[in-house]
Amino acid sequence: MPFIEERMHPETAAGEKAPFPIGKPVSLWKQLPDGRIMCTACARYCRLKDGQTGFCGIRGVHEGKLHLYAYGRVITGHVDPIEKKPVIHYRPGSKIFSIATTGCNWMCQYCQNFDISQRRRVEGTEVEPADVVRMTQEHGCQGIAYTYNEPSIFMEFAHDIGVLARKAGLVNIFVSNGYSTPDAVAMMPDFLDCITVDFKGSGEKSFVRRYIRVPDAEPIFQTLLEMKRKTKVHIEVTDLVVPQVGDDIEAARRLSNWVMDNLGPDTVIHFLRFHPDYRMMDIPSTPVKTLEKHCSVAKEAGLRFVYIGNVPGHPLEHTYCPECGTMAVRRMGFDIVGWYLDEKNGCKSCGYQLPIVGTLEKTAGEDRFYSVLHHG
Ligand code: SF4
Image (cartoon, rainbow, N blue to C red; front, top):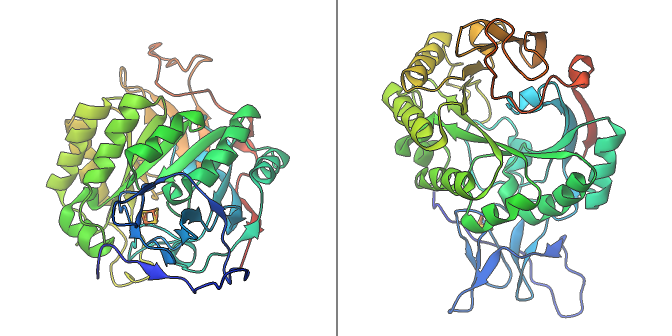
């Protein structure tokens, strides 16, 4: 399987309407000396001739310009708890309007959203950026998440929505694989408030090559460094632990040490339980003990907020005060069921101020999980 795959879309004769959505000409690309265009939205850096579509299936060269074919097309829209992203140290208890386009720059063999991410037809409900903002407000959400597929691939669409959303007092959140570029990161300060960057198999080369079809995880580390240096975006890190093939404890130690050294001890890290899906139905769910061992090495590395995800009821779903060890926030799955901090997020036991952005949102007790838009 090649790491870069260029596809052709059907030729269009002059004056004919294109037999596919053409979306909009966008900005993240460079002209190459050989006449091709290099897309700079993600670290695949597809080099495309006129008529070719990039690996993600939603960007391509049409009449000499790079187009985002999925601009203005949302394949799904869902109200989610912010904790589902997972994001737990930012605006806890928020309702987040979550959207995606089709396509993706990764080919995760276990993808839970493969019907969206691996679809190579550009489809979706036609919406303008202002429509997305309006729907977010209509459903009483505090912000928008660009999720279910990799948002870098529709960066310019996310940017246009996000700028309007910020003006309207909403926040913008990326759920990203981090396989991005400095050019894409440069657009983030205009609109992005928060990101959760998903490692898989702790970013081990053998895992990402075989199960994601990318050469290595280095661009993810570079993206995180670039964001840390040049933006104020709140960053959380996740690591999907896949038993048998992506659960190496030394890899988890290396990742944890890197997060500690480069992002700091207060950076949230979530170790997520894998569930069999898509083309990896033969691998079982991650044993809880494996997740606990990963958490132990992250704590040994010095990280102070280490969580287990996808194991409702586990003690490592909760937040503990790093100073006195008292429980600060009690969770059950995506729900917050106990909040033991004062109005400034100080521990009620010792007064230590926890690094959580925002306090408990009023929406925490509402229904925060329902579908709004579905395009079959
Ligand atoms: S966003 Fe799509 S077209 Fe652009 S480099 Fe990545 S995979 Fe290629």
